[in-house]
Image (cartoon, rainbow, N blue to C red):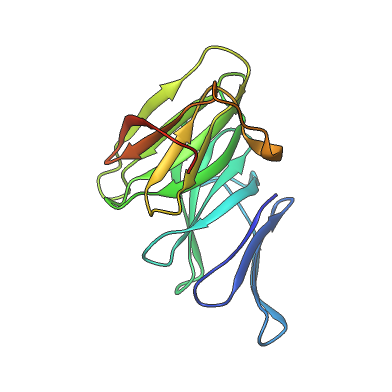
Length: 178
Protein backbone atom coordinates (compact mmCIF):
# COMPACT_ATOMS: atom_id res chain seq x y z
CA UNK A 1 0.00 0.00 0.00
CA UNK A 2 3.05 2.15 -0.32
CA UNK A 3 6.75 2.13 0.31
CA UNK A 4 9.55 4.65 0.48
CA UNK A 5 13.28 4.81 0.94
CA UNK A 6 14.46 7.15 3.69
CA UNK A 7 17.60 9.27 3.71
CA UNK A 8 19.01 6.83 6.29
CA UNK A 9 18.90 4.09 3.66
CA UNK A 10 16.12 2.20 5.41
CA UNK A 11 12.93 1.27 3.61
CA UNK A 12 9.46 1.79 5.14
CA UNK A 13 6.27 0.16 3.95
CA UNK A 14 2.89 -1.13 4.96
CA UNK A 15 1.27 -4.43 4.10
CA UNK A 16 -2.18 -5.08 5.47
CA UNK A 17 -2.24 -4.11 9.14
CA UNK A 18 1.55 -4.24 9.48
CA UNK A 19 4.14 -1.44 9.28
CA UNK A 20 7.74 -2.41 8.44
CA UNK A 21 11.19 -0.89 8.63
CA UNK A 22 13.76 -2.77 6.55
CA UNK A 23 17.51 -2.24 6.53
CA UNK A 24 18.90 -3.38 3.14
CA UNK A 25 22.50 -3.23 4.44
CA UNK A 26 21.71 -5.71 7.22
CA UNK A 27 19.23 -7.52 4.95
CA UNK A 28 16.86 -7.58 7.91
CA UNK A 29 13.65 -6.11 9.23
CA UNK A 30 14.67 -3.76 12.03
CA UNK A 31 11.08 -3.04 13.12
CA UNK A 32 7.61 -4.36 12.39
CA UNK A 33 4.36 -3.94 14.24
CA UNK A 34 0.61 -3.91 13.74
CA UNK A 35 -0.72 -0.37 13.46
CA UNK A 36 -3.32 0.28 16.16
CA UNK A 37 -5.51 3.35 16.43
CA UNK A 38 -4.91 5.20 19.69
CA UNK A 39 -6.63 3.65 22.68
CA UNK A 40 -8.10 0.72 20.74
CA UNK A 41 -7.24 -2.73 19.53
CA UNK A 42 -8.49 -1.76 16.05
CA UNK A 43 -5.79 -2.07 13.43
CA UNK A 44 -5.45 0.03 10.31
CA UNK A 45 -3.36 -0.06 7.15
CA UNK A 46 -0.40 2.11 6.14
CA UNK A 47 -0.84 4.12 2.93
CA UNK A 48 1.70 6.32 1.15
CA UNK A 49 4.53 6.79 3.66
CA UNK A 50 6.43 10.07 3.38
CA UNK A 51 9.65 11.14 5.13
CA UNK A 52 9.49 14.60 6.70
CA UNK A 53 12.49 16.92 7.00
CA UNK A 54 13.03 15.79 10.61
CA UNK A 55 13.19 12.11 9.57
CA UNK A 56 9.77 11.10 10.89
CA UNK A 57 7.67 8.91 8.61
CA UNK A 58 4.11 10.19 8.04
CA UNK A 59 1.41 8.05 6.45
CA UNK A 60 -2.29 7.72 5.97
CA UNK A 61 -4.15 4.91 7.65
CA UNK A 62 -7.16 3.10 6.26
CA UNK A 63 -10.05 2.81 7.10
CA UNK A 64 -11.06 6.38 7.74
CA UNK A 65 -8.40 8.97 7.12
CA UNK A 66 -6.18 8.73 10.19
CA UNK A 67 -2.91 10.64 9.89
CA UNK A 68 -0.15 8.65 11.55
CA UNK A 69 3.52 9.28 12.26
CA UNK A 70 6.35 6.85 12.98
CA UNK A 71 9.42 8.04 14.88
CA UNK A 72 12.35 5.90 13.70
CA UNK A 73 14.59 6.85 16.64
CA UNK A 74 12.14 5.63 19.30
CA UNK A 75 10.22 3.12 17.15
CA UNK A 76 6.90 4.64 18.24
CA UNK A 77 3.70 5.65 16.46
CA UNK A 78 1.68 8.80 17.06
CA UNK A 79 -1.85 9.19 15.75
CA UNK A 80 -2.75 12.73 14.74
CA UNK A 81 -6.46 12.22 14.22
CA UNK A 82 -8.90 11.81 11.39
CA UNK A 83 -8.35 14.31 8.60
CA UNK A 84 -11.82 13.97 6.98
CA UNK A 85 -14.61 12.03 8.70
CA UNK A 86 -16.47 11.24 5.47
CA UNK A 87 -13.49 9.82 3.52
CA UNK A 88 -11.98 6.33 3.60
CA UNK A 89 -8.61 6.69 1.90
CA UNK A 90 -5.76 9.01 2.84
CA UNK A 91 -3.70 8.15 -0.19
CA UNK A 92 -0.93 10.77 -0.37
CA UNK A 93 1.10 12.79 2.14
CA UNK A 94 3.62 15.65 1.82
CA UNK A 95 5.28 18.26 4.05
CA UNK A 96 5.90 21.91 3.15
CA UNK A 97 8.74 24.22 4.19
CA UNK A 98 6.70 25.52 7.16
CA UNK A 99 6.23 22.02 8.61
CA UNK A 100 2.56 21.60 7.60
CA UNK A 101 1.57 18.06 6.61
CA UNK A 102 -0.88 17.75 3.69
CA UNK A 103 -3.16 14.79 3.00
CA UNK A 104 -4.80 13.91 -0.31
CA UNK A 105 -7.99 11.90 0.24
CA UNK A 106 -10.99 10.34 -1.46
CA UNK A 107 -12.95 8.58 -2.87
CA UNK A 108 -16.43 9.93 -2.22
CA UNK A 109 -15.21 13.52 -2.60
CA UNK A 110 -11.63 14.61 -3.42
CA UNK A 111 -10.36 16.41 -0.30
CA UNK A 112 -7.08 17.96 0.83
CA UNK A 113 -6.38 18.63 4.50
CA UNK A 114 -3.54 20.64 6.02
CA UNK A 115 -2.27 19.71 9.49
CA UNK A 116 0.17 21.59 11.71
CA UNK A 117 1.92 19.07 14.01
CA UNK A 118 3.25 21.87 16.25
CA UNK A 119 -0.20 23.25 17.10
CA UNK A 120 -2.56 20.39 16.23
CA UNK A 121 -4.51 22.67 13.89
CA UNK A 122 -6.29 20.87 11.05
CA UNK A 123 -7.93 22.53 8.02
CA UNK A 124 -9.78 21.24 4.99
CA UNK A 125 -8.28 23.49 2.32
CA UNK A 126 -9.78 22.00 -0.87
CA UNK A 127 -12.71 19.75 -1.70
CA UNK A 128 -14.99 18.82 -4.59
CA UNK A 129 -18.43 17.30 -4.13
CA UNK A 130 -17.99 14.64 -6.77
CA UNK A 131 -16.48 11.15 -6.59
CA UNK A 132 -12.72 10.96 -6.97
CA UNK A 133 -9.45 11.30 -5.13
CA UNK A 134 -7.23 14.25 -4.35
CA UNK A 135 -3.47 14.05 -4.45
CA UNK A 136 -0.62 15.96 -2.82
CA UNK A 137 3.03 15.67 -3.73
CA UNK A 138 6.38 17.23 -3.11
CA UNK A 139 7.49 18.90 -6.30
CA UNK A 140 10.96 18.80 -7.78
CA UNK A 141 11.32 22.46 -6.70
CA UNK A 142 10.81 21.57 -3.00
CA UNK A 143 7.27 22.98 -2.82
CA UNK A 144 4.11 20.96 -2.15
CA UNK A 145 1.35 20.77 -4.76
CA UNK A 146 -2.21 19.48 -4.62
CA UNK A 147 -4.96 18.57 -7.04
CA UNK A 148 -8.63 17.89 -6.26
CA UNK A 149 -10.25 17.71 -9.68
CA UNK A 150 -9.01 14.28 -10.55
CA UNK A 151 -6.39 11.85 -9.47
CA UNK A 152 -3.24 11.60 -11.54
CA UNK A 153 -2.55 7.99 -10.55
CA UNK A 154 -1.62 5.92 -13.56
CA UNK A 155 0.08 8.86 -15.25
CA UNK A 156 -3.06 10.43 -16.67
CA UNK A 157 -2.91 14.20 -16.91
CA UNK A 158 -4.89 16.81 -18.78
CA UNK A 159 -5.08 20.63 -18.72
CA UNK A 160 -8.40 20.42 -16.85
CA UNK A 161 -6.60 18.86 -13.90
CA UNK A 162 -5.15 21.89 -12.19
CA UNK A 163 -2.40 21.68 -9.61
CA UNK A 164 -2.18 24.31 -6.88
CA UNK A 165 0.74 25.22 -4.69
CA UNK A 166 0.13 24.44 -1.00
CA UNK A 167 1.99 26.57 1.51
CA UNK A 168 1.81 27.37 5.19
CA UNK A 169 -1.48 25.49 5.54
CA UNK A 170 -3.26 27.17 2.63
CA UNK A 171 -4.47 26.42 -0.89
CA UNK A 172 -2.36 28.64 -3.12
CA UNK A 173 -1.92 29.72 -6.69
CA UNK A 174 -2.39 27.50 -9.74
CA UNK A 175 0.73 25.78 -10.90
CA UNK A 176 1.98 23.55 -13.65
CA UNK A 177 2.43 19.85 -12.98
CA UNK A 178 5.04 19.50 -10.21
